[in-house]
Length: 90
Ligand code: SF4
Ligand code: SF4
Image (cartoon, rainbow, N blue to C red; front, top):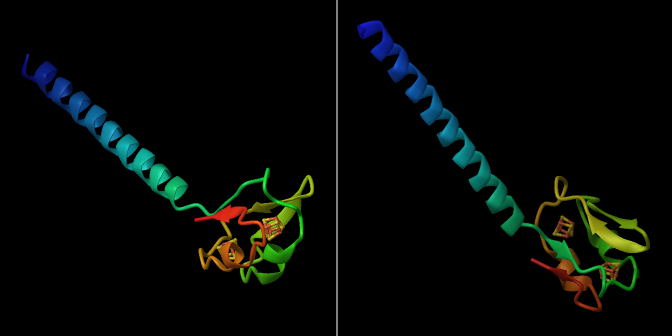
C-alpha cells in the first residue's frame, strides 16, 4: 500500500516537471518571436541596401525579397534605418 502511494507521488512529480519544462520552453519561444526583426515582403523592392549594411550577414535574398536569418541577427537595427521603403520593423 505504502509502495503504491510512493509510486503515485513519484509519477505526479515527473508530470509536474514535464509541465514546468513545457511552460519554460513555450515562454522562451514567445519572447524570441516578439524579438524578431521582420521584413514585410509586400513592401520590399529588393534594393539590397539592408544586405550591405548588416554586420552579421544575416540578410539574403529569397525569391527576390530580403530575408533575415533570425539565428544570425544581432538586433542592431541598421537594416531598419536604411530601408528606403520602411519594409523592416523591430
Ligand atoms: S537588425 Fe542588424 S543584425 Fe539584424 S538583420 Fe538587421 S542589420 Fe542585420
Ligand atoms: S532595404 Fe528594404 S527594400 Fe531594400 S532589400 Fe532590404 S528590405 Fe527590401
